[in-house]
Image (cartoon, rainbow, N blue to C red; front, side):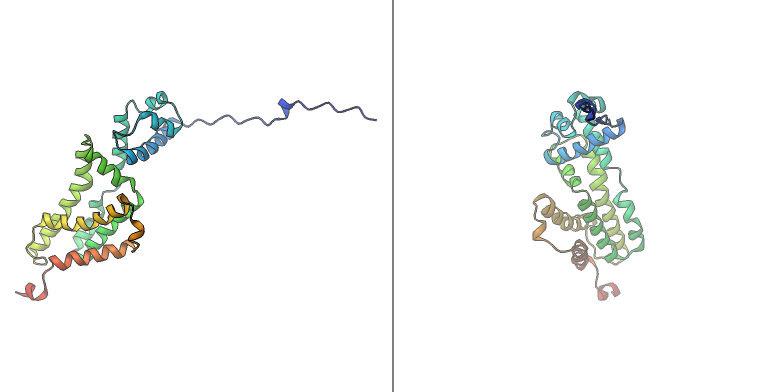
Length: 225
């Protein structure tokens, strides 16, 4: 009869735990930035604490401060990232040069819709910076809003000078078009009424372009005169 086999050592039998992989500095900064974006979009700058930010990332506040020395510096980094993508004006420049009014305004509305749907936090961040009077509000507004308004105003002014549009105020015309587009976005993204407006966004963009052009384009008879 064979001798009893020695009992296994439970400590040896348990599989060894893999050491917890630590994120490198850049990956950790990106993780913190993503958590900050979510927090700031929900609560704004004033309503967000570094304690909540650290909790969401799963690190201590001290560790958070090693990457970003203050909440202000973290907010500034987030705003800088939001300004980084290819600007709407640069994207729309070829459509403006082509001079096809319906294609220009339809694509402009479509692209604004696409950017907000793809990055819904952007709108909330923009509104919070303005409402809280944050120092980043001015540059953020200038790059993300004013530049677009001026771009549309210049397009309208050019088409008025060419006789394609009635003698409308270009600045007010730009605000009128953007007002339709932004109202649709606010209702869907700020007031949570997306289900009440299920139309495809490209269809909405085309409708807004037609409504706007119906008010500013000169008729054939007027153009002949």
